[in-house]
Amino acid sequence: MKKLLCYLTEYKKECVLGPLFKLLEASFELLVPLVMAAIIDVGIPHKDQGYVVRMCLVMVGLGLVGLVCSITAQYFAAKASVGFAAKLRRALFGHIQSLSYTELDTAGTATLITRMTSDINQVQNGMNLALRLLLRSPFVVFGAMVMAFTIDWKAALVFVVAIPLLAAVVFGVMLWTMPRYKQVQAGLDRVLSATQENLTGVRVVRAFGKEEAETQRFEGENQALTHLQVFVGRVSALMNPATYVLINLATAVLLWVGALQVDTGVLTQGEVVALLNYMSQILVELIKLANLILNITKALACANRVAGVMEVEPSLTGPEAAKAREGADRGVRFAGVGLTYQGAGDASLSGISFAAGPGQTVGVIGGTGSGKTSLVNLIPRFYDATQGVVEIGGVDVKDWPLDKLREKIGVVPQKAVLFQGTIRENLQWGKPGATEEELWQALETAQAADFVREKPRGLDSPVEQGGRNFSGGQRQRLTIARALVRKPEILILDDSASALDFATDARLRKAIQEMEGGPTVFIVSQRASSLRHADVIVVLDDGEAVGVGTHEQLLESCPVYQEIVGSQYDVKQEVRA
Image (cartoon, rainbow, N blue to C red; front, side, top):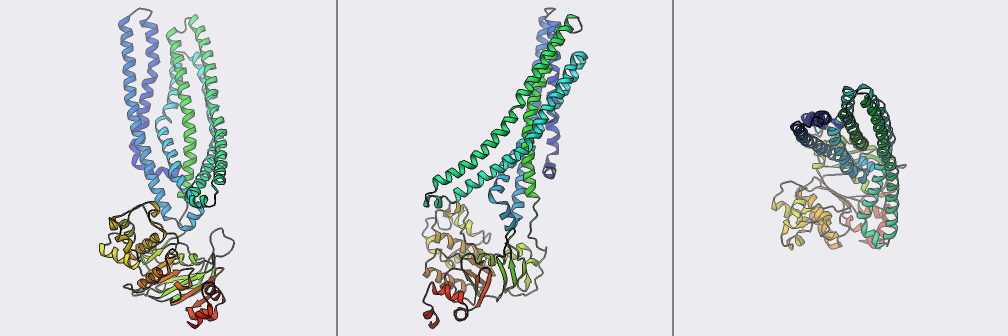
């Protein structure tokens, strides 16, 4: 939590004024029992209606001033807590954006969403309550005890005994519940994870008729969270009855002591009423304090979870300035490259070596799980090679600043992802401020211009979340166009034409080859026909490059490639061709 307090620096004034006005309100509240005692001891015995009216007006005045102080305190507390939460959420989102795929894979999407939403909301609520009540409640409790001593020290001894007992109950429950609330938040993570998986894969769930099974799975996670929350809630609920019992016992003892003191003439009836009012104030404030401590306990648990994410250091870092040589080519070279994912037992890639010159096309093919996507993910440094070196322009990719490196590269991932907005806004992700001509040129190359022209609003046609108002092939072509807008030096197509027919796929590859500037193209595909004209084809099998060469060379020398091509064509015909 301490590490997060730096986001409160802009709200120092509010953090001082909020509690200050609450203490002012509490001070006026502590004066009310004395005014009430004066009415009972002076106004009523002497039947002085004027005095009673004046004292009643004083109480109304104290109430109004207290109300103004309370509203002012609430304003400052809300401003500080909401501003703090906004800055923290912004910082957390920025930090998450800086994390590599490795850290994101480890944390998990559901966990990060929980940190951004539920956890920060709990921290915000805890901060608001703390600014308003953390000083006020103890101030009223001890202030009421001090005021009781000014009335009669013997009667006030009841307060001395009751307050420590109440504090023991409150803090005992707090210490027991704090670790349990961490378990509750972990259970919430699991529920959110199950929810996210089901909503993301709802079509798959329905296609396999697994609605009932997934509902039961969700109910299991939800019931586990519910039972844990109920268990913690029952212990927390003991606080209120325990405090009420102690306070009522203390009130009974106070009445008994007060009655004896009134009989002996040491105390007046008004003073006994004032003591009872102070005891009531203590009761109310201790209940507030108990609820405050529970909320602060939750907030601290959530703050520690947020801080845990903030403490994760990005594993990918780059130099401030590029170390690339002037005039360096755009060639890509893999030298003895290996990759082992964090927490994985075996290497996903090992001993990969090949080179691609500027403007060449590199095909990457292999069976499912052979490491094709892992291979191309090393070029833009989505992951870092754990062995060997990946070079661009003769310089290790680790020696390029990340922003400069990724400006050179256009990536079209396996899953076509579009963002809510318009076609124009999605394409301009590739190059902010791209002109109309540049956008249409990219669409023509990506074979997407025809269906975009058919839209009534053209480039300004809406794109729903995830691009669900487009077909799979249209989404793929739009994501390819988005990458082409920036005219990258290196273009990575990670199985991004799988939804296209053979004719459209062929036109797309031809248009990319004819692009101005001639990018170095990496094509990951399951189709041998998409790669047969590549300058270099890398054949992967179980993370190893079992063949590197042209289509003709691999047909003669690489059994794995022969098997892949043979599953799609007649190998003898391919050799003769």
